[in-house]
Image 1 (cartoon, each protein chain N blue to C red):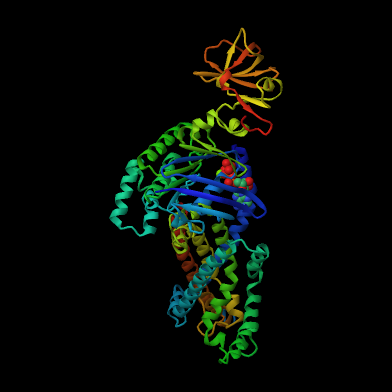
Image 2 (cartoon, rainbow over the protein chains, first blue to last red):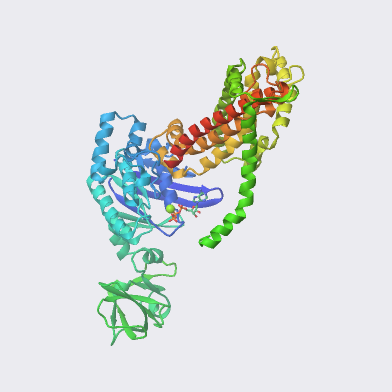
Amino acid sequence: MGRITLDKVTKSFGEVNVIPPLDLTINDGEFVVFVGPSGCGKSTLLRLIAGLEDVTSGQIRIDGEDATRMPPAQRRLAMVFQSYALYPHMSVRKNIAFPMKMAGLPEDEQKRRIDSAAKALNLTDYLDRRPGQLSGGQRQRVAIGRAIVREPSAFLFDEPLSNLDAALRVGMRLEIMELHKRLATTMIYVTHDQVEAMTMADKIVVLRAGNIEQVGSPLELYREPRNEFVAGFIGSPKMNIFGGNPAQQHGAAKIGVRPEHIAASTETGTWEGVVGVAEHLGSDTFLHVHETGLAETVTVRVDGELPVKHGDRIFLTPEADKIHRFNEQGLRA
Amino acid sequence: MATQHARSAARLMLAPAVILLLGWMLVPLTMTLVFSFKQYLPLRGGDLGWVGFENYVRFVTSSAFWPSIWATLIIVGGVLVITIAFGIALALLLDQPMWGQGIVRILVIAPFFVMPTVSALVWKNMFMDPVNGLFAHLWQFFGAEPIQWLSQASLPSIVLIVSWQWLPFATLILLTAIQSLDSEQIEAAEMDGAPWRSRFIHIILPHLSRAITIVLLIQTIFLLGIFAEIFVTTQGSFGTRTLTYLIYQRVLESQNVGLGSAGGIYAVILANIIAIFLMRIVGKNLDA
Ligand SMILES: Nc1ncnc2c1ncn2[C@@H]1O[C@H](COP(=O)(O)OP(=O)(O)OP(=O)(O)O)[C@@H](O)[C@H]1O
Ligand SMILES: [Mg+2]
């Protein structure tokens, strides 16, 4: 079980109001990702759920039970920190055993769980090392191992992969998803990373300044962003947003078109511009087009093969049914 | 400092300081060593020639020797236990956010700035005086017979005075160590279900172990030589004659420089044994 409900939760640090009243329901077994710009309150929200910060007002319920004033240990949640927060003077085995030792589990049960966690996380050969003798990815796995053995009702991750290099991130991302499929335990995951959010989440929560801008599945957010902020935040590279004349032609204050929904051609098209930088990724090329009269830069995804170079003229055509319209308040029209 | 030339120039320029320091250290040590093999009584005939190991034998066989070793160990050990225990407690308290933190921290360090002689005199006259001392008044207030601190409880009194002086040092070192503890580790332990006591034993104390060994090492070296506190309070009576004080008495009160020097060499050996022993522990603790 791991159903978490936030009911009008607020948080202030002294005068500063970080989380205005916020409602959110996380269902049992869901993989929920919190995304948002730096400083928007993702970590704070996670720490409120964990019980490491007190809520200023409102209620947190875990499996229907009021947990607002419960100390962290009683909430049956496990957290994986960005810095891993391993105990440096204990061996990997002792690190993983620590929560079980605190819970007073019998020795043989402890050993059984350590062995199975170590096997699942490829840590069997490292059980007698200290955290200082492990690589970043291994440390991350130890931190996850320490979380798993408690058999919590939900896992909380605060940017767990941000200290790892790109290749390792992909591997760990898959491992965490694998783990989620296997355990079917609720997971709440904070990240900056677009790809992590899109690939891992059952449900994405987009936050801005402590407010929830939109909650939905990755594809919902991608296809129907509720406002300009979500539109700009979800998807990589960013959606192009134009105001003025081209927007009015579509009967909106602003329109947004994703780079992948604009066709580029060297002969004809709706809009015209000059190629700036071309980023070749192999499979795709991202063109930064200037002097279109729409916005300073328009980003377009084209086939890897389109023969254009800096300074060339280029014509752009948006896919008519993929244009997002927004009103003056930035809300989806 | 990479080139040969720069290195030899550096050596040349460092030489005066090194030679001065070496001389400073070696001359007294050599003189002590020389005197320790002589019968040397300044007021009773002066230098009476070589006597071999006689001074060494006499120093350890005198009835005052073992009691002085015990007194030394009790004072050093007592002060270490008190300063480290209270130092940890104070450091934990001072680490909490509180009103007037800066001022409180300065107040805690203050005793360290008071000279040993002065602090011992203040303790002796203001607190421990059996007639006018604050403690005597306190005891009388509760209807108890005032304690003759420096005669009835002489060793504990000296331990108390010296502890008061060294507590700030221990607190300061331990406080910086506590402040360097990653707060996420404590939070992780909290989530792992560790109550305060377990967090202290399993997380905070191991984190402090290095700082504790450093406090242990530095304080031991200084405490082996305490003198002023004994000189101005008990003058070595009532079982407070430490090795240092015994040597002082042999040289100045008995006017026996040879015997005192032999004691001095014993003190050097004792200090080295303890230092090597401590270095071993520290080395192990600092490597881990
Ligand atoms: N202990 C604190 N005291 C005062 N303000 C705080 C405290 N902790 C966080 N804040 C403020 O709350 C806001 C949200 O912080 P939080 O750490 O939750 O952001 P975040 O979304 O996790 O950012 P990042 O992505 O950079 O980690 C920030 O503006 C921060 O300055
Ligand atoms: Mg954060």
